[in-house]
Image 1 (tube, rainbow, N blue to C red):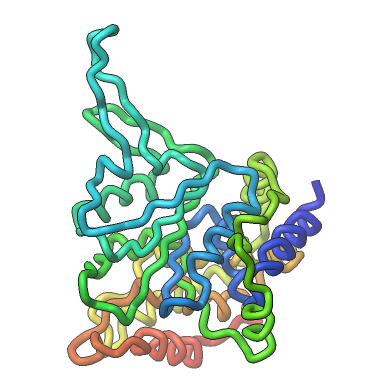
Image 2: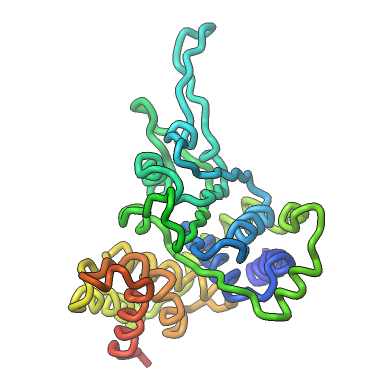
Length: 310
């Protein structure tokens, strides 16, 4: 398998549906190869669900979409033990979480109790039900969407849940030409549903292993750790980036280098990933809590102050 050709085929397939958002697609694929989970946060109608579905359908993996609502229960996601009269014992019936790619649509519309059902799955790739542990498929990739501006009938994701996402991406509005193409290509069947798989399960696993082998110089490792430590000393920050955030930045940088066709990480990789990987892990103080761009501004300031290794 040629990793660069395989990744290029995956990117081209998704870009045939999501127009004018090459950088978002590039980062989303890096998130997949880093064995992380992706939170897509933006206003309605810009393609959050379409991007998630396009990624899933481009892979020859099992795929489940869960529409999160206020009455959804943890058992509706994980599964439930049902008594079988023939065997006279309880049998576990897996829920939709048991798929390679899970689309958690509008994740902030369900209660914290149901949101917490994803914590063990996203962290350990397994779930515990009735004292039994059940392994999830490999690879396991959760793509969640939410609208950050709508508050009626929503439940903000707790910090522990946000920390399980490797990246948080915003799609943004398309450019003029891309929007014209989107409008002109309207069809009876959703475009993402017509996509064919261009990558198989074993290829995804192989690419994830290849990403783990990308070289990271010691100076760049120190650079990542210093960025995380500087967020903890800011007067505007209540809680800075945790060591898990540093690990996430490391893994994401390796995966992005592979997506770009390199076997080594550069400072540019780290600087590009700092906001999507670290922003949602920072808890601000006082009035800064209510500013959506406060954490991003802190990170941009940190990147200016921390010396870049040559």
